Image 1 (cartoon, helix red, strand yellow):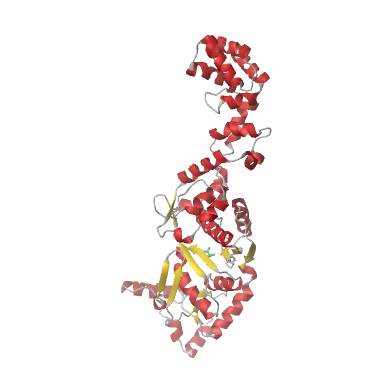
Image 2 (tube, rainbow, N blue to C red):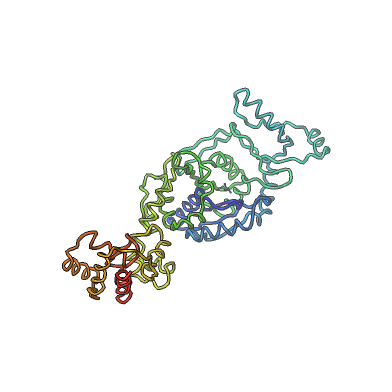
Length: 442
Ligand code: GLU
């Protein structure tokens, strides 16, 4: 059983980077069998909003990445308190009293000397009396987790391979603020233990958090899950882009991007597998493997997404889109317009050529005579377009553009569009003849 979790903070909408992490966690569990948990990291009460929780659920549902269960950190504060007390009891958590300015100054001094800005554990040096004096002054402590400097931190990362950290080169992390509120580090570890998470897959910006959290797992006598850190998602120019940070499901939906296109692109971006228009998730799952993930940043290019989207739209069967098509548009209608559209939404624009009214076009006298002849020559065979054009070719000697274009213009009001052979039967005999006669008369 593989249990994964996607743990967004509900302080904004999901963006393409979060979606990618959610997808990969979903894929891990769907491939191996197990639970995919949506964990709402809402310990920051001031910044977390219910509307974002809703939006996260809606987006995941639209993408077809529903979780098997949902957990909320704000409902688990008692668990964190218990873990905190136990770790404090065990000497792994200590109070610290430095102000933000003092810490900043310490950092500057170290950096000025060319040293890494690691917290100097000044708070551990405080005597009982000094601590009591701080408390008497009304200074409430914040709390740090004490890393074990003698314990080497090593793990076999699912993407990065063997990773090693020297605990001495990492600051003891602040895990709780002076006002009692929680920072991310401890609650996440407590949850991963309680929820039986076996595999943590997240962005490489969390690598140093993992180093700390591995010591937390050990300090709480828990098994350490498997960790994997995927390379970050960047814009096509190779830089972290602001635009990517705000690119989410709403804008994809508005542009007519199908969830399956997003899934196909994000499933393989940054891996050694080619990004292809694969609409079948089972097929994507089959090849999904962390060992194909590269360490170089994954470049997200909108043009790729659009290309994959169009290819998928061109392959979509009628039953998969029928609810989203205009009234009356049947399977033949879908097939007629499908090659001409980039998005499913565009089907409605072409469908108007069938249902009318169509644009009025001015023809030359010669073309009007030709269209009059077409109106009388129209025969409703199995393939009325082929019948009509071959008989007109014969009778008028016209060919190519002069043969076809006036007909298309008269029948659809446009000089380009879906295949006339497919469109004409949909327009219907009576309406087609009426359109030709109107054009001939104008
Ligand atoms: N809420 C954290 C974040 O969004 C979760 C990180 C994790 O996956 O552990 O960065």
